[in-house]
Image 1 (cartoon, rainbow, N blue to C red):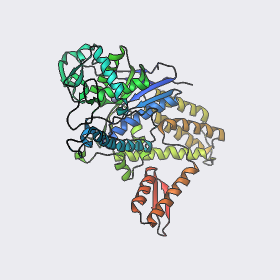
Image 2: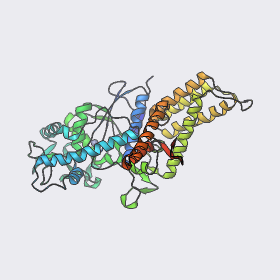
Image 3: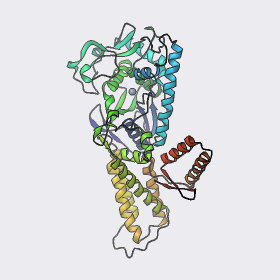
Length: 480
Ligand SMILES: [Zn+2]
């Protein structure tokens, strides 16, 4: 059974059913990271919301083709990678320095996603591998009168595109015709012709182009990779709300200016995250990466749950209290799962209420899906699960559910876990894996390799395993 899922469309400002171009197949483009540093939990919130979106379509019977780019050439990357080079360093050395930085942080980013059980994208294009496509796109815009070159750079002429401003709902009166900006990021009140191709400045890596040596602007990267890998009509394009303007507005201008028709049907944006009621900032000491939290003993899956249990279009106030609540909620679902996996031992005395567990289960399942299909309403979907847990626990205390009923409940828990990825069936293999890691840590300690011992401990912590070193020298463990 294929379910219709509705999402809020930033283009129309309405919740609308997603009707894919090809029935049963969803093409999804999400703007990936700029890889020059660790992702913070605000960034990760966006990637977790997109994982939820993608998994909901997959669990709802759609095939999802997901493309997420890696921005590996950009102003901040150049700033952070070129410091160690002399002023006359050759271009090859500049590219190599840039690549060393971006490869390191791409690997770290992908590890973080794996720790959070975010499913990998089908396409993970690096911007630097698509320079010819970007150049062709800029040439195409030039040929259509939508771009002009000036001093080695190329700019988009927004006055020539009638739909410019459609996504961010801009007032065309406020646009500064003829003025141009070189920065990739700018405010709404600075709307003007934006840069597509940047002429090389001294000290920067460059590529050859019809306009001389230079490099792509940030916005053109996503248009080129998105059209190359997902085609001329894309079902869903997503990012954080901070990307609506100018990034996504400019992507529309570039792609639709070139195609001459609508490129993306549904634009979906996730809200940002605050920490303990404040904007996250390094100066406030409330700036966290995933690794910071894991080092504090936070279970990454509790973080995943804490983020996903809030609606993606509401500002999320991250707090350690909220994390504890998430841990407790997960404990409750996992304990229920264990109970359903067992045989059931009724003994709580006579049961007076009339409850048909199969009907109750079907009701919960429908409520769960109605909520998820309505713009990913996770708070309501999870409420349906908790009501089911309360009702069936109460019944199971008195009249043990049959094996068939328990099996049906477990199937629903699997179905919902395919989306939330937080209460999987835990196999004996996991225990064996934990034991093997504990042995590895013991061996590292015996060899006085403290760095390795710490690394293994952190890995176990990331799996949600708490170690207990005992007086007799042995090590016990439990799930956090
Ligand atoms: Zn993008």
